[in-house]
Length: 278
Image (cartoon, rainbow, N blue to C red; front, side):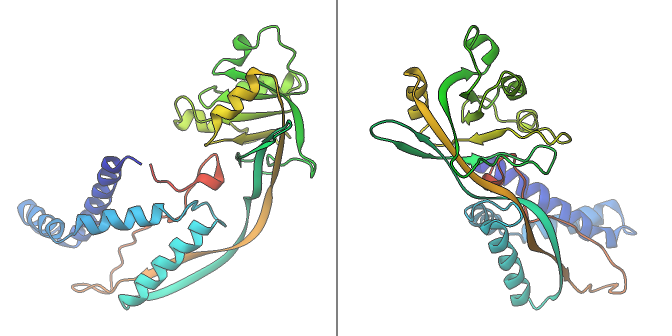
């Protein structure tokens, strides 16, 4: 995790809150407002804020339905109770992608099982699930530009390893008959690359998984054209979720309302890895 980046983001959040608090003093001079903001910033314990952010990021995925989501929810609730704030609990249900189990097994005399994670569903409703027996095929490595790396290779029936920054290549491989795509933690992992790993509209049934550890073992398997089996138990699940509304009483004009809205959940193209730690 980039701690410096966390510090900058936290500072931006704190300044936003301070400016919001200063709105009630807008009728005063600019200098008075600046002094008020400075006094708020001086009272903030940045080390404690950073430690809290690090703790929350250690909870794991905060995608709705995952453990990190519920742990963060309870942390907010318990903190609000300790501060004596009035809490309004808004409960609702939603269909969310949820993964129970996912792995890639390298077949052979001594099988090796590697943890994996499913990607965001295509068309919102078509997850990267496999049949109960999994999907099997010879594994090949396509890198960042599979159409060049695998020129002349019959892709049909194969499992293709790709660097994460391979754009929309998975669509071409699907059309060429690939069984599935396994993404490795190589290359740039920016917003464009994340959004290119699924189709937001068309519910294409094609298994895409991400492997974070033991990628080298898969590359070695590809070098000897070993067979692998992908097992991914995931799907849309109707879960109970919550919004919390916390009421902080005002001092000078309590009848007026300032709404500060923030989300405590997180999103990732790999839902099981949505800790938002970076």
